[in-house]
Length: 287
Ligand SMILES: *Cc1c(COP(=O)(O)O)cnc(C)c1O
Image 1 (tube, rainbow, N blue to C red):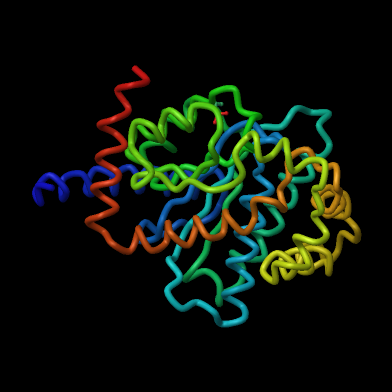
Image 2 (image 1 turned 90 degrees about the vertical axis):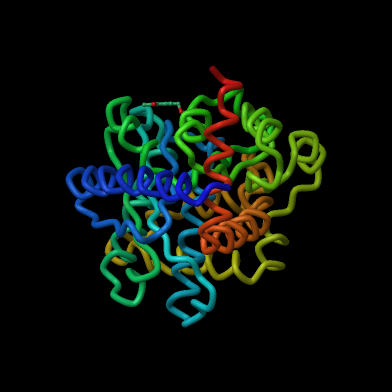
């Protein structure tokens, strides 16, 4: 709670954000603004890790911006990075969707004061050294029950990022260490995921949630692939499938709500700094 310590903490994070901005400028050609929230998901690209859920939220923010609904919106820069196995077709498609969405948003002057998006290729340990020091929000959003532990989550926590995450893997221990008030928890728990499987109805979820319906419509209408017809059909098909093992549609609403809480918390600078300090100090558990 010491003001001077808070100031030093913020200076330290700002220095980390500046180095990360430089890396993203050099490797992605996208200019992040260090006054905006740095929202980061870097890890291997896999459906269970749900980079797709992250990009659906990005599209939702973009949809809000283009319809003029920016009231109380926290400006943010979203970085998604990671490698996919060469033969993993769906993972490659998800990378392509992220890149296409990023291009549309970054070229739209209505959007860039609120939202910037970059995909980082060749994610590796030497880039993580720069990324974790500059991260403010750590995305750990796997389908509950699927992540054995994760280690990226710990690296971010130790560097003062606050986690938005599901009740999965070592997120559970992070949550234990920092308390719910210093963590943005969302989504189904592992037992809820399993019991929902029998009756999972993504079409109903989509038609019941206007935000999700609009996001799906934007993708389906070709907004992000004007000259690449049908490119994302398989992604839409996977979200709509009642056997979708990752249940992306099930956690969308809860994820968007948690992201709203993130935005509000970030605008309370002192509260956010306190949360950040507590995350670092309680990360000794993972030493
Ligand atoms: C930490 C790290 C990982 C593991 O990240 P998870 O989020 O736990 O999957 C993978 N690759 C690199 C380069 C890392 O630094």
